[in-house]
Amino acid sequence: MSTLDEVETIAAGSRAPGDWKRGALAWSANPSVRALLALAAILALGALFNPSGTFYRWSTHRDMLRQVSVGGMLACGMTLVIVSGGIDLAVGSIVGLVAVLFSMLTIHLGWAALPALGVSLLAGTACGLASGALIARFSIQPFIATLAMMVFARGLAKTLSGGQKISTAVQSADGTYRNVELPRIFEAIDHRILGENVSVVTLVFAACVLSCAVLLTKLLWGRYLYATGGNEKAARLSGVPVDRMKLLAYGLSGLFAAIAGICQAAQEQQGDPEAGQGYELTAIAMVVIGGTSLAGGRGGIALTLIGAMTIGYLEKILSINAVGESSRLMLTGLIIVAAVLLQRSKK
Image (cartoon, rainbow, N blue to C red; front, side):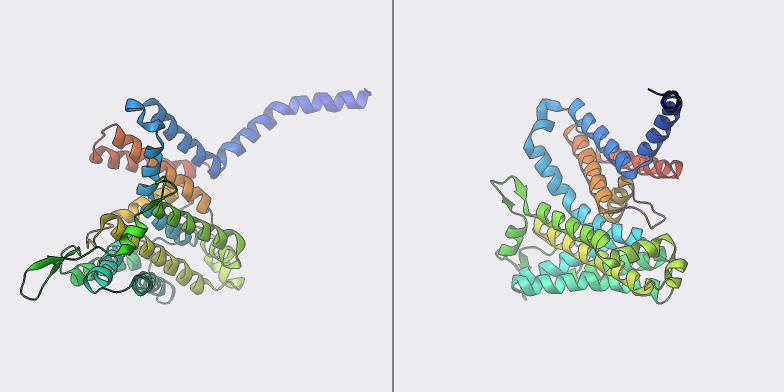
């Protein structure tokens, strides 16, 4: 080895500790790494607090995936909205509205599955587009516009249902009730396949995740959404159709909320006008815990998927350990705050 080689070797060795620290900091600042570490910590808690070996049974994980699917669908739409620099508080109410509408069409009016699905999906999408129009065309703040839609959609759900759950007990003209058969579409959606190991709603959730992944990573519209959320003014000057992107984000958020509402109705076998209350907070929690920035322009659906798994496993672990709902809500709130503070500390 030449003298020059020896000098370079010594210099490289002297830089190694600093380089290692910088590499470790960069690694820990990666949102994906932080999200995976949070999920790993929750899984470790599940393995530690594991009454009767429940956590090691596939049925526990299968049920968790089923339970988290509706919230995960909302989180898919919420990811698109947050990436574009907005927020959508109306998704929970849209779930209730679509659950009522779908149940009325299929159970009470006897519509076939396909027309009922089409009308229900269009209703949810229309609600999302209305929110997007208020924001894009009239420059109303996303918080205010979607708050108004949240109240309106919930009121419409109660108006359509008469404040009652839409179930197989149908009231006749003389005031008596008769029971009708539950439409097959409800059983098809709330069915388990592959030897009853996977729920259909879980596959629907997976399809929502995949479609969002394609939009955000493979299509030009995805780049436009990131540009809109990153710097709206610069995006406009660069030729990005900002208003259209907002309509796209909120319209898709309404569509995913409609899908979630249909699945909610199928799981409950009825249309409850109160369904979906607080679901918007769960969806936001999944997005934030995954590492997507509330400031917009950063994040992705893979992070949201990790966040959904984290929330799902957390609730399941607390449930199998008989932790009360009030404690679960408080713990979830603390985790959301911690996730946001961690994002700020890594900027």
